[in-house]
Length: 313
Image (cartoon, rainbow, N blue to C red; front, side, top):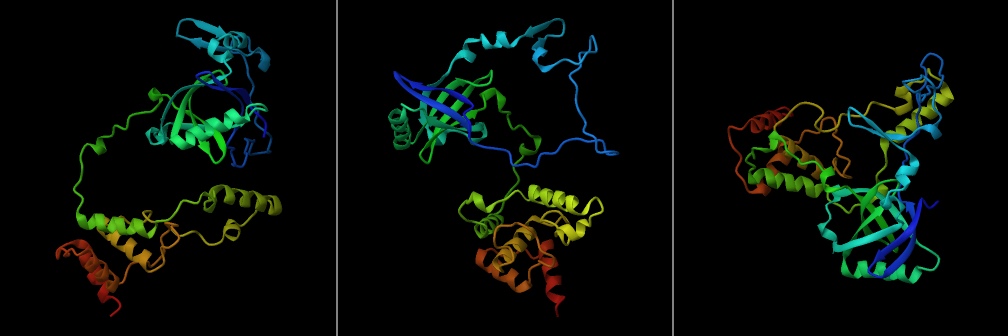
């Protein structure tokens, strides 16, 4: 990895020189635009709308337009800002870890101790670990003043940029104005369904299926050309996921999902539906008796299950 920024963490009179590295990378397949007729690359030109000339990048400046006037800001102007010249990660306060809302997290960076700062680096890391606190910091990176969170990950200090408070939108939806009544029966079934998918989070178990399939498609076209058989490449069409078919009653959906997970067809937490996964009537009775709630005799789900019970006979 190559350091993208060098500076120092400062709190009080303590100074911890560090190097900053990007902690994440994009794994998406890189695609570009071409002319569909001949495959020629589509290029974009930076053309001035006044004189019509193509402008080289070194002569392109940033500007602000208020509707009447335009203020041009050169790279020298931006570099002269005091915040941009600062090379310090300034600790503002130490807060309990649980007070940080994950919605505020943006980009993540690793901090490496500079050659002579290992003891101060380790001291800061141990202090954050023992106190279970996060350091809120201010710093400047790539011509922007940023708010950040200094946290511990393993034996490494990480710096996560935070969104400013006015960058987070309020969730104001008319659909949330009313609160529908949720019965204890529905809560019991929902909790039972959740427990059937419960487990410890292991990130390595999850893969980006779309990118895997995209690479598979690209390899097939490189080998076979444009006349490939996608059905042969990807196999049979994947079954529809739960919720993508008919609209069914919420109670029926919960009941069938719990029964399917108990029978073993829903194990593994894949969340995919299977054809013919409607529960047998015996499983329905067992689930109802466990919940301890009497079934409503006139409810539509009960009628459907009664019909399903007579069908095998």
